[in-house]
Length: 113
Length: 111
Image 1 (cartoon, each protein chain N blue to C red):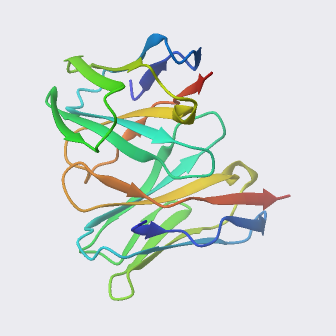
Image 2 (tube, one colour):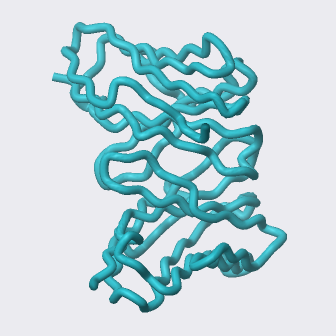
């Protein structure tokens, strides 16, 4: 199993809603990532979890709240988002240090209305 | 300030010919470089990588060349196939977990 599975694939939410994005991998990878990608832009790193601990937060607004319940799961809790937060949210995982490839999920297309 | 740059947003190549994608970087601390391929509505998939201690890495039809003095790397695809039509991202890493991406190059392989 070399997959990173993200749910849902598409999400439309209002600015007052609370929703969560989910990511799962069963490759035994100990690093998991959230990236945000806007149209025609490169993916931008948001958060990194290493061994289930948050190791990098790229100054992401607090309306995005990551959670790593166990080594296979990564969540991104969303609350009071703005329309400009609409983007493709990508989850990735890697065995450890990035001298091996990171595997990406297919992303959640988020639209904030 | 983008540290990884792909200055060609698009590339069109005939099937069977060589595709050459270029990538420049500004951070001399980058020590690992990767290429990812992305189809619409899918996440990026890893293609090939190279460590800064090497200047070439080959995997089937894909070869990556690294010129550290010029802070430049390139991806060669030979021969190009219709299924290679996708967006290609160059990425670089300087520490354990941060990966900086270029803006991507859209490759179209013409039959």
